[in-house]
Every structure is written in C-alpha cells, then in structure tokens.
Amino acid sequence: MRESLKQVQLEFATSLLHTNAETALLARLAGDVAKNRNRVAHYRDHLRHTWHRALASAYPVLHSLMGEAFFVALSREYGTADPSRSSDLNRFGSRMAELLEAWPPTATLRYLADVARLEWVLHRARYAADAVTRPSSRWTYATVEALENCSILFHPAVELVHTSTRAADRWRMFRSSGEKPALSDADHPQWSVVARVGWTPDVLVISENAFAMLTELRDGATIGDAHRSAVSRDASFDFDRHWHQWIRHGIVATADVRRSA
Image (cartoon, rainbow, N blue to C red; front, top):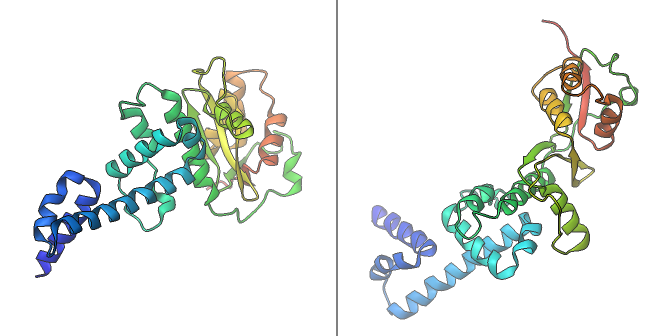
C-alpha cells in the first residue's frame, strides 16, 4: 500500500508538470474520468499561477521587457524544466539566465539572460543578512598608505556581476521610465556591483579595473596588493574616489589590519 501511494503521488506530480503524462494517473483514480481530469487540471493551473507569481516577483524588469503573454510561456517553461525543490519560493528561479540562454525563443536575445542574471542577484541581495559591523568613520577618508595591510569584508548583500551586454543600464533605465530603453552599444560588456543600503538593493556600474580590484579584495587580497594590481593595469586609477564610493554604497562592511600568522 505504501509503495502504491508513493507511485500515485509521483504520477500526480508528473501529471502537473506534463499534461501528456496524466493517463497513467487517471487510470488509478476512482470516480468519473472527466471529473478527475478537470481536478488535475485545476491543480496544474494553480501550480502554473504560483510559478508565474514567484518569477514575476523575482524578475520584474524581465517580466516587463518580455510582456505578459511571453512571460507566462516562460514561467511555464521554467517551472517544468526546474521545479521548486524548496518550500521557500524566494529560492525558485535561480537558473533563469541558463534557461533563457538555451530556450529557442530567447537564445539569440543575450540581453534577456543578462538582465535575468542581474535581477537574480538583486533578488538575493534583498533577502541577504544585514552586516554585523560597519566601517568606522576613521576608515572612510583613510589613505591607501594607511590601508596598505588591511583586508576587507563585503556586506553580505554585495555581489559582483559581469554581463556581456549593458544589463545594468537597461535595468536602471527601464526601472526609472517604465519603457524599453533604446541603448547605443547595447552589446557592450558591463561590470557592476550589487549592494544594499538599508534594505533597498541597487546596482552600481563600475569600470573593469575597479571590478578586478574588488574581486581581488573579495578573494582576500590586502588593499595594498589589490591597489598595486589596479595601478599596474591603469596608472591613473583613483583609489580615493573608488574607496569613498564603496563606503558610501555600503559595499564594505569592515576593514581591518591583516595579522601575520
């Protein structure tokens, strides 16, 4: 009996994902076949609505860029390809960029996958923990020489994002105007950092060099070492301007002198 119940549950779940798989389930169920088919369809419609609602919440700009009908089709495609494995629907949708790159209707529209990649990071940032510490005021205007042997920790919401198109500009322009932006050099790559001041995530577009320095700092380099690398790539790199920007946007949670072992 237990194995039979498990089999029915599996067939029910499969039928919700794939309409053509419901025949085996209907053969097991008691009662009128037509009524049972309608009941399964009701559950399937509810599941698809849940997919759409969760994905539209995580990807509001992608939703608007694609339009309602296209996004409905996308949400069904995504839900079938990558069903939720958690009761927390805030985790549902993590592989959207991968699907957009592979799904034939969107595979040639690289900007959609890039916008999705950025929006998922923003979605994660919204629910990330808050920083336990803040950089003290003495760090804000410290010189690079004073920070030479310091390492930093990012705010838990901070993530670095590199896209092959101008996803951050597209996201910002659409969010401010509500219209699809006409971008020149739209296929130009972009480097950005997602941060959260208070409880509102935002995107800061940065240079490739600043992105590389932040990557080194994230991976444990001291400020002195990361700065020397940045200057070797571009002698005009302005550390003070970037450092103040990183503090102001809540990217740096703490800076401390690295202790030798």
